[in-house]
Image 1 (cartoon, one colour):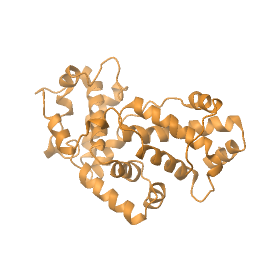
Image 2 (cartoon, one colour):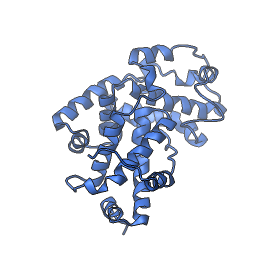
Image 3 (cartoon, one colour):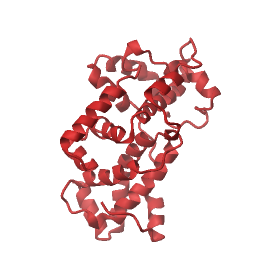
Amino acid sequence: MSATVEEVAERARRGESAALDELIRTLQPRMYGLALRMLWHPEDAKDATQEILLRIVTHLATFRGKSRFLTWAYRVGANHLLTWRKGRIEGQGFTFESFGKDLQEGLEEKSPRPDDMVLFQEIRVGCTLGMLLCLDRIHRITYILGEILEIDSKDGASILGVRRETFRKRLERSRQEIVRCGLVNSNNGCRCHRRVQRALELKRVDRNRLLFAHDLVGASQFPNVLADIRKLEEAQRTVAIYRSHPDYAVPDFVTAVRHLLNLGASGVREY
């Protein structure tokens, strides 16, 4: 039987080297996924995730078991991301209105060719992640936790340090805003598939350095996935789009965090 994350964390707290590496590997996809959805760009997410993991492992002694360990770890991650410097995309200050206007420019009439489907996937994932940036940070992280990651209101409220009622109200407001996506509402008209050439011209997409898309088979199957998504109730469609994203390529942070620990990194606040 495999050990629980609490058991691994306790062994790491007692100084077991292998347990510390196992704990980092267990947490890194969760913290990286949270950071990527909050910050959009993989490099920004990578930097933030490294700091989050360092904060977690250097403060294991402060975990008192009053919540599940993952809830505590997400609290460390959320608090860090809420005060993280603005990333390269977030700094552009998109609103739903300005983002929608940007999507209307330079549209092609034709649909992407079969060999462009990975580029379409790249634009689709980038666009839907970009929509999250139109929410302010507190509503963005609430939506990510409560809707995309399916964390319940009890744990969500604990992570963000608010009452359950406050968490639920923020989640509802964020749902109402994010439902604008044209993939979700066919009457709104998704334009991602008509922006391939424009995105290449503006260098927002680089054929040789894709940030999100890496699976031609999965990309070519998305029209069928979308058809199924549109059969869902409206409230369920948006989150289904986010959950349909391809698995993010998660860096291995063990070596980097180990290096920082060996340098004697300190000075981070407790949670």
